[in-house]
Image 1 (cartoon, rainbow, N blue to C red):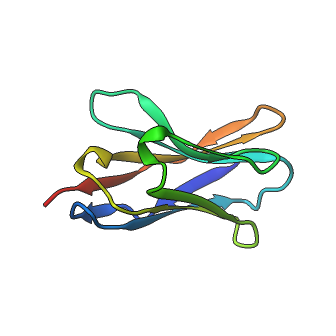
Image 2: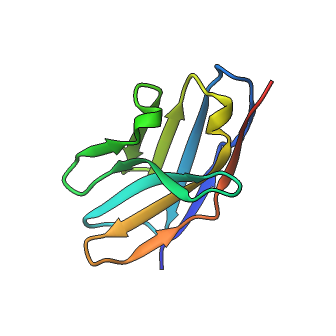
Length: 116
């Protein structure tokens, strides 16, 4: 069973930046996609960014050119660099991993609040 732990959320002013981290344990191997989703109160959970099996990356239109997803395989960690944050980016951000076998795991989420 893969456990994912998100960190790096918090309160930031509009225009600010945060970097989220998603650490997986135990160490994971093989082909898998890893990504970030977010859910605001009363709304569905939406894809933010995902690094796919094979190396392609998908971004939601609402974060293109502002957010960047990256993976550090040596540290078993995935990052989401978020720049130019807007109040509408306020949500709980979740990390998700999906293996080629179909096995999937979610983290518990980290709150991001963008407010002045």
